[in-house]
Length: 219
Image (cartoon, rainbow, N blue to C red; front, side):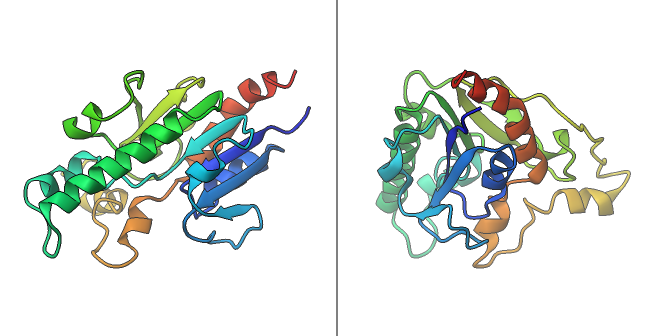
């Protein structure tokens, strides 16, 4: 089977890239920052500059979502110190433009990861954008809470592969706190990286479940 060309956008960790590479695909990641693993299969730059390079699948893992997700909607009415309201809305427009460009890319199979959006972001999205599939890391064997929306075009929803039982806060507060580490990440320069982490179970599920569909294109 001819390896499929796959682009992993907005990823520095290499987790999704490595999951698909393990299945024999010709896969590259792309981000404004270098790859954490210093891979030579990583493009440093704007993902939009390479969307027309003949990819069979695009997975955009962590598009700038601070202004798109529900947790950041408050900044659109009361900006943080040192920023203006106009800047907040400009950030929103920039984030939705990147999302739309990736969604409308000339690539047959697309997945874009994003937290649950607020209404202002939804209003700016492409009209054909479907409702996301909401998944959790613990569906795939990773002990963590992180509700994540997967916007899919040409790809089926994921099926849970190793569904764990989440701990109840009242019954096991210590374990619940560990599972909540993404939301409780301490403020600091690396907080964005912690909150945008791709869990290996999710990456493995994507590669395992979508590879047969991608390979059909070359049959």
